[in-house]
Amino acid sequence: MRHYLIAETNWKYIQANPYEVAVLPWGATEAHNYHLPYATDSLQNEYITTESARIAWEKGAKIGVLPNIPFGVQSGQLDIPFCININPSTQHAILDDIIGCLEDVGVPKFVILNGHGGNDFRQMLRELQADHPRIFLSTVSWFHVHSGQGIFTHPGDHADERETSMIMHLHPDLVLPKSEWGDGTENPSKLKAIREKWAWAPRAWTKATNDTGAGNPHESTAAKGEQYLKLVTEKLASYWIELAAADVNDLYEKA
Image (tube, one colour):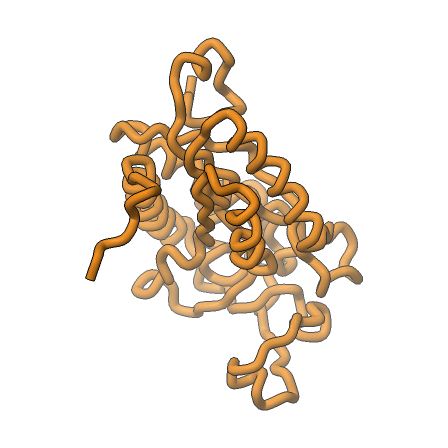
């Protein structure tokens, strides 16, 4: 039994063993180029969270991973079948309920492990922290843990070499043959400020991309995915270990 996974753990164990950190993986359900499954974000999230929690648990950190939430913000993809959108206001309401439940029973720390670029929980946590002062709130996006530099040739941000390599390693049976892959080419904005990335606007996905991918996947390999996942899970585990041991009332070093 993996006690770091709450879904597999029982009340007999939990009532006798307090946890320091609750982790909520939050993914999405959306198209990933032609060749990857709609559950790509959630499949990656579930593995990364589970494996990093295992590493941390075996080093003594009391981490409890909650079930992954499979729906994210998809407001730019509403014209793509089965890209399921839930709005940020809905996410806020869900988090308010979950955090309240954890705070009420004395779980001291909570982290959202984000696996979808359309999700952004930072402003929500500013508000929720004020509403729930007895629990420390944090968020991590796994794709910011390690850039993949030195592993991947063609960086992108959706169904690219990085994501394709990970799913090839984790679930090769869910990846279409390479002959079916799109090139992941993007159509740049006509607005110079957005092209230069000092202005931002939501992307209309079927206009901004040609196959729903953003980044060339064609040099992906399962070996690259395995190498990258090892780096990410080990680094993420170091945060779980550090956070579990931390005194949330004493988090800043005086200059």
